[in-house]
Length: 255
Image (cartoon, one colour):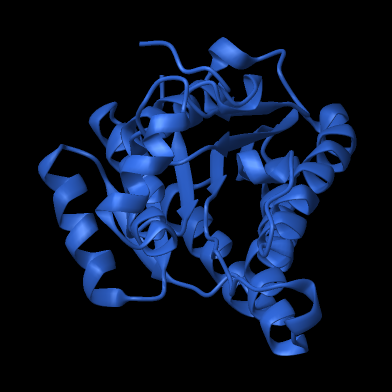
C-alpha cells in the first residue's frame, strides 16, 4: 500500500509541527508549509531522519496563488494529496468590540477564515481528481463558546466550523471528508503568548477539569485519526480536545 501524502499548513511550530512528526513517524510523505524557509528546511531534515519523504513549500495561506502553488507542488512531487491539515492560524489582537479596527479584523480573518477557504478550494480540486481524501481544519473551544475581548478570534473560529460543515456536504459525493479539531488550551507558543506568565497559566490549569493544558502531540493524534480509514464514516464533525472544558466550568473543584 502506498504511503499517504499529507499536506500541512502552519506546520513549522506547535500543533502543525507535531502533526508532521506524527505522520512522518508512520511513513507518510509529508508536505509542510509556512512562511519561514529556514524552519521549514530544518523540519524536512528532521522528517528525513525519521525515514519520511518530505517537502517544504513556502506559502502564506492568505494568498490564493501561494496556496495553489503549495497544492500543485505537493501533487507534482508525490502525485496526489490524501490528507490535508489546514492548521495555519493566528490569535489576532484582543480587545473590546468598541476598539476593534478593520486592520485587526483583516489580520485575523484573512488567516483563520480566508486561509481555510483557499486551502479547501485547492485541496478539493486535487482530491476530486484522485478519488477523495480527508481534510482536517482547526477551530478551537472558542469556536463553540464566547470569550470577552476576543471577538475576532472567537468569530473566526466559529466560522471555521461552519465552513467545515458546508465543505463536508459538498465533498461527500466525491469521497472527500472534512472535519475539525477544536483544541482547548494547548502547550504551544500561542498559548504562552495569550496567557503571558506562569502565574496565569497556573490559574488556567486550576479550573480545567483535567488540571493541565493539552499537548501538541495529543492534538496531532486526533488529526491522524481523522485522516485515517478508522474515521471513514466521519465527516462534518468537530472533535474537541479540551480536558473537559466544554463539559462545564467546575465551580467546586474536586481535590
